[in-house]
Amino acid sequence: MLALDEQYSSKRGEAYLNIVDVRSSQVWATLPAVAVDGESWTLALWYLQEQGVDCTGTVSDGGRAIAEALRTTKAISTHQRDVWHVLHLAAQVQARLQRVVQEEEERGRLIERQEQQRASTGKKAVGRPAKTTGSEQEQRLSQLHRMLDGVEYLFAQLHQLLEIVVLSQQSQPRLLSVASRRGEVETVLDLLEEVVQSAPQPLRKEVQRGSLAGAARFAGSALLCPGDRRVSARSHCPVRRTGGGTHRMGMATSGDSGKAAQALA
Image (cartoon, rainbow, N blue to C red; front, side, top):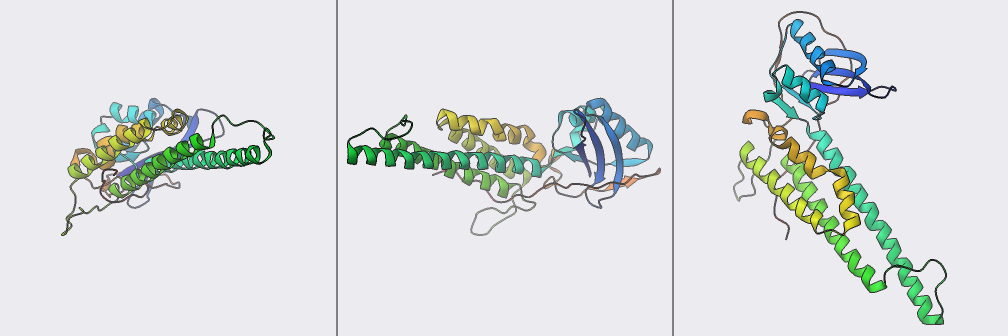
């Protein structure tokens, strides 16, 4: 299994292209900063073939340039999405939601102080008047907390479902098949979209800006192995070298995950 990765340079639109064996950390190729496009990656993959590297599969962050090159070299059928980037995106979305909730909590405390001041003095509170009343803000906060709880729960389920080994929730746990896990992931993503659609418009934009559900759904079966042959994007497949030389560099591996999805109560 080869990991394909781009390390962007200081020049806009250019990156170092790296190809690393996931299992052994052997560096098969690293290219100086070139344009990040399908042609650059195609040349890199053809170079590997010329060096006698026989790859049984690839894994990447799902970039368009890499996908284009894999289609050109007819290697897209054995390509997988890595787990780390999807989980990293989930963490970013969750952090944004938490910031929004914290800002609304602070706004709620400000509204409460203004209303208390108005009630005790009979005068208009100092500062910019609030756009909502205390009761309206309390309802809004309740809705935001429900949404944040739902998103955090579903993200945790997604993380668990992408673990290397996932067991069922039965009294006698059994190993979940790739097909079962794929179905569970789809359920989690469907529920996530429902939670997002029920959110207030400003907060809905925060989630949609991250495009987590779209990214994970786009990755789809590739997150859980093409052709049902592998357990996760972190599983190991051999890379055989039949001749030629190698080049060295550093590598980045894919990330973590864990369990079975459940419907939100």
